[in-house]
Length: 263
Image 1 (tube, helix red, strand yellow):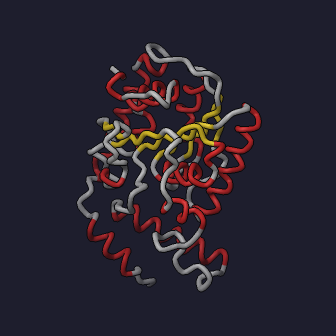
Image 2 (cartoon, helix red, strand yellow):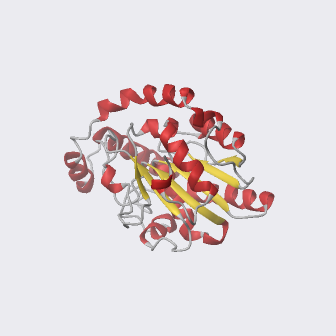
């Protein structure tokens, strides 16, 4: 049996108290969204036709974000599927796939692209904004652990299995011993270690009842209102009506957005 690296053992032990069982309530978010006038575009500002790319979280694909993409189109934006495939690959490779979508959206709509990322998808979005700031209009993260890897042991174990599969498939175990870890030196992680561009508006939406990641890894802590707490679950933030409302107001005026103005 393959042994775990020491840093993964430490993370496993440190995160064993995250309430993963709460994720069973994600259906409440899904139902609440469909009952909300926000989902029908009522009481929120209309979009200006600009491009929005929504990026799925770990082990997810564009399919589960179909509701959000359809909603973005209804309220006046031009949504794009991320095109990264299943989010279970080397993040550096996924970042380059994401860039292809950003570049196409930029060319087709004639302007910078808004990025919305769920969980690990938000980390990819932030990395893209650092690497290609001239093509990014704003970044919205939903339960995205961009400040550290503190996740539930089950998710951590899954990530370790994915990491092993990537290494085995490429037969490059010796060439990339730290791939899919915080110790990697790829361009993706180098971008995350750099400062986020000051001129790109961003908001970080999180929930303190997150059962998958430690919510404290999902916030900026900048004191400027860019951190938005909502009730709900980690997975359910992709279907949460309060999240949708904040996104609508933020996309309409990223530079002047204030969460206290969203009633």
